[in-house]
Length: 539
Image (cartoon, rainbow, N blue to C red):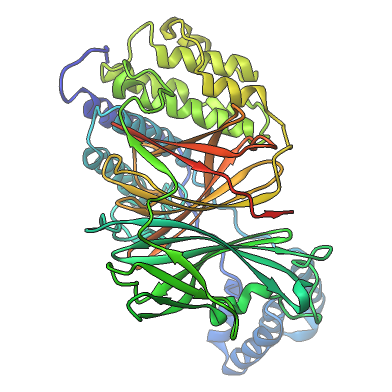
């Protein structure tokens, strides 16, 4: 198809691409599901022929599944004549279990169609509903022809299956709160063990919203490597912070007593970060909350009427990370460039596979009429690939226009491989304004030598592997030392109308950083917030 077509060109191209992949898949062999253990056909036949053989097969399977085959042979025929064969077979199965080969050769083609669909959705050339419909019809046709696995949960792309249930899907996205969201730094220390011999837990920040309240903590443990040292063989190790929630007591100024329950957590060597939910939520008119960390200890009072520490701003040009002239057409290419930059910042090798899907994405954008020669977004991607040593498709050189790299990208590129970040924690607390229908509250920062992780609570957004259009938001940070950091996808938890996400920023912060600016970039708007880094602990 020629570029510049009218409305409906993107959907037409996507359907033609799906039909081409469907025709190509007809030459592939049928998909064979993996062989189930304990279902060897000769054993089933012998069990059906003789009740005594059935009992023998069942007993052998309960004790040793691989012995069921030999037991069936011995019970169903002349034992002495088959003894040698059964012995050899049992010995072979006990040392080498060879499952039936089961390939889904149509999956790469489905992946290419999904990449094109995602790029067209990000460029606003097609609705996500229409793109999902095309993918659903393609995967359904392939499953009906036994070219891929069929059914929900057995989808072709990382468990993705349109219209079916997906284990771990976020479910309903939490609605925007109807009232005020408040984030307050705490910075209180809780010694663990006698005289703090096991380590220290720092309560970093408190977030209060009409629908939830959360405390963010980080525990720095002492010892060589407590996550690998178990008190007794065969028993799992439990962190000293395991019972912290049972000792926490929270009371607001109106006399409301809150129960504390663990919500989410991330672990690494010598560090354990957790978020504790409070039930019920302190009343909206509360002026302060008292947090007691141990029976008999003096409570720590956190004021709720003072202004937040971070100063948020909402503006389409709040950070100017990327030129806005390209509009949504360049969004899928800029997102691919950020993914490439993030991969390099995390220490990943420069592989040709990183841009393997770019020709198909460019072809889809051209067919939709949103990619023309001289594209600045494609020029930025080509310049970044050249800087990282990643091969750029020669067939797309004529489409790439002259473009320089943004200052934030150059800052990240200049510090690849750095591991000089401060091993400290900071009670970061800030609430960002609404950006493209979502709200975020930052609650605590944990810095390491190679990265910095910020815990965030979200409303109006939830991570979803099935969604098309790529990542909805991009996170950046800049410390007062002039270093830029890009957020990589971290751990997340969701359910019950709550979403927690850990934003892992790479490369690391400046060793002497004292303040940090966060930038949230959405499809149509941006926002920024500045927070101080009042370090409370050293690693």
